[in-house]
Image (cartoon, rainbow, N blue to C red; front, side, top):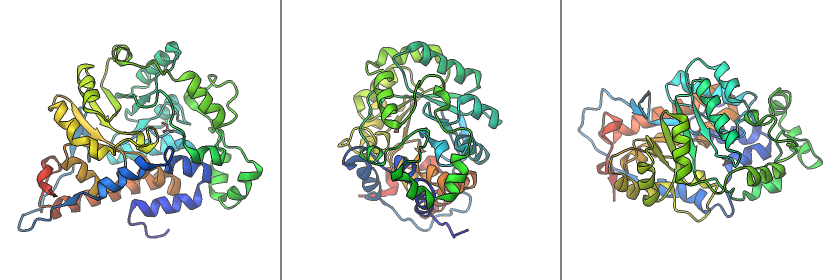
Length: 378
Ligand code: GLV
């Protein structure tokens, strides 16, 4: 096994192992990818403040997220098609997260279903919901998540309409994966992926079984999203979801202070400041730039988390410094999964935790909960 020292190493190994269409689906963003790049660039531009002469012997990265104890302020974000990076990827990622002590969020657009994951883990996980035009189906997803014992619902608000991902169209991304003249050469060089994923019994959208009559390709899926995801989704519907769910509710995809205030009004337990990892509104500001104003607007009434561009413990600390109480990672763990399966997800979490722990100390802090703007340099 190569010496893996950072998330970028996992990305590189995943890039070589995973079929190109699936890797690019994870890796890339929408349109010109301005926002995808801004998420990273704006995090990197935040300089941490080195402090010395402080006893940093006893340190803690522990905190809580929506009332759950976590080993560090990092949850696994919902990622579509996870199980096409590695067979049964959702179950493996959930196991790695649970063993590590951080929350796992299962996407509506997952390969393993809610029930598959519930059967494969022994602790509760979170479920991410897209609201469909067919409210009966949305309600049934909420019911299934309840029955599976999910301990929080993450309602995504920024994908009523899908932003175009040029790469997915150019790669002819298909679910279930399809061997075509254009992809066969790529897959020949990815035998480990091919044996693992192509032979797995779960290759299509587990939660939607019976709902996509002819799931031939992601062109069909994009059309399916356009046809099924509800573009009328409004705050009234958030109320409807909250009532049906009745548990912890996290609203994901907030990038504007006015929307953050609306989320407080809607009774959310937490919001995720997010531009969907640069996969939706290209040209939107980075999530780290949006964060301070949102933290101000929310006035401590609910928890504010951030996703988008987190690739290291340093990034986690930057987000905490600007007022987030926690973060979510998507690509960072998906690369780990694509590289080494369950072990790779565990490794991604370990890397980020170690970086966070050391960075905390070098900034002169002992507890992640003490992060504040004071640990940043202008
Ligand atoms: C779905 O959530 C996606 O970003 O592809």
